[in-house]
Amino acid sequence: MKPIGRNVNVKKVSNIAIVTNALQVGLVVGMVLYVLLVPHAELDTLMAKYILVIAASVVVWGAVVDIREALSTRRLVGQLDDMDSTIEAMESLNNTLRAQRHDFLNHLQVVYSLMEMEEYAEANAYIEKVYGAITAVSRVMKTANPAINALLQVKLAACDKAGVQAEVNIQSAWKDLPVPGWEMCKVLSNLIDNALDALEEVEPVGRRLRITLTEDLRSYRFSVANTGPMIPLKSQKAIFGAGITTKAAGHGMGLFIVKKTLNDRGGDIDVTSSPELTEFSGWVPKEIAPVASTEADN
Image (cartoon, rainbow, N blue to C red; front, side, top):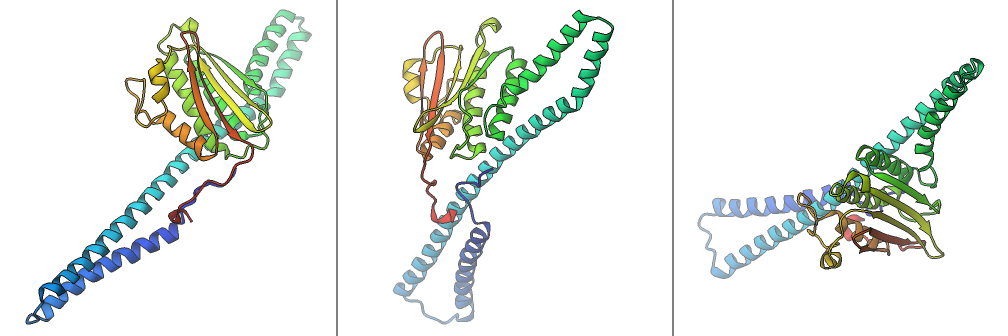
């Protein structure tokens, strides 16, 4: 797994916070001691203004530094949460594969016994059942990125549970994807979750979802299409903004995060929607510059 693009130097953050707050405390304590220990000192108006300006400057500077470092830390926590979700998905896929490997010999023994007893219909039914379970996993094991494979496996299971007919069309292995796997998982996960939410509004027989991964000479491309309700044209133009949502219980940040993540990597996403199909199509370039970092990220 590739390292986080925007790193926060925890030691530097803590050192800056300590120095900043120490200066604030020291300045306040010094002023108090000066007034208490030198009670007869005459502070003229100009001196009082100087002290006030210095104190205010240090306090404001300290507050700005604290806010900046808090934002950097919050961003790091968000990245770690995304990575945790990806790791959980990979563990789920790994457990599924281990279980299949463990059961493979048992399946062969059952089929062999049924064939010996000339129970050919039963053997055929058993093989079809096992084949279906194996195919459900193998259809997502077509990319070179374990994190994306794991995410697709988890989301396909969610589709089955929701009664959604899901199709995965992987036309590229995304072998040299220049974006960390967990970051692309965040993008795809938001889009798939939104699609599943939209499909709750249609009859079960019409719930269909299609996930496509492909590439061209310059970019890696993907799309998530669903047969949910049409997104109004006015909403299509604003749907990627912060706080914009078409769901009653939504917070409107999922698509904003998707677009920002892709834009930060030099890619983008758009949406087309009709009464029959809504499709989100995005891409990232094959060669991208490192994500710009601020001083607090170094």
